[in-house]
Length: 323
Image 1 (tube, rainbow, N blue to C red):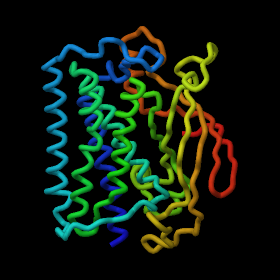
Image 2 (image 1 turned 180 degrees about the horizontal axis):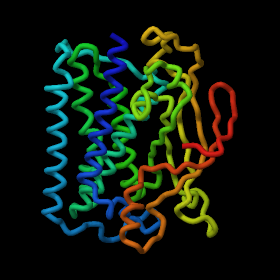
Image 3 (image 1 turned 90 degrees about the vertical axis):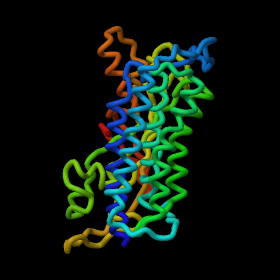
Image 4 (image 1 turned 45 degrees about the horizontal axis):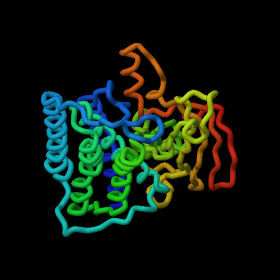
């Protein structure tokens, strides 16, 4: 039962990522992905209402609706078809994967809400309405999935997942309301971990490791150095980033000892806290329109840089290049 739950949960993350990427590619207009309603001092300009463009709004609403309905239909008629309906049940997974799964929920919700907000701006919706309606998209998209989890055997409704989804949307909404800008961007990186080759396929193989191996996930909070310490030397696009990752995990709550008849070596589960630099592509001044659109669409990318790691094994490590 637990193994099935873990494998299903990992597959669901893959589905959510695909849906999120489709939403990014089909709805988001990169030319407005970095639009700001701030004068640089956290104060909004006098006018923050754009001219409503009904054609664009129709594209956004119809595209979002189609993706939403399609994903819900997929879950109901394909995803859950082999699972028996059961009385509504709850599942406490807060301790799973050293909370990496929860950081992933936050990222998915943040990405969807960020795109929803900027997509409504692209449609000419006023900033205030775009913040509330678009910024809530991540929470809205993921809540039905959490509810359905509680109604099918082998799953369970997780308040912790709902809380993480809420945090993701609030990261967008809260910053726009408080600062009229995303002064802190939430980013994700993945790197091949040393644990996957030891797991006999349990943590995936090749590209599948992105979905199965949480040891390779790192989630970052990235903000401009000039927002912390005003100076005339460091460009506005140079950021400092704080990251969280974990290692030594061969299972959700505790490590498996074998998989498919092959022993998995005993390892210590631990957490990693990282400090690195980053680039905010939205703040790089460029005149070329094509290059600007490319930079604007890279708002979620953490650039590989040297990093300092502090972990719960009591180690202090330096990575010449961390990604």
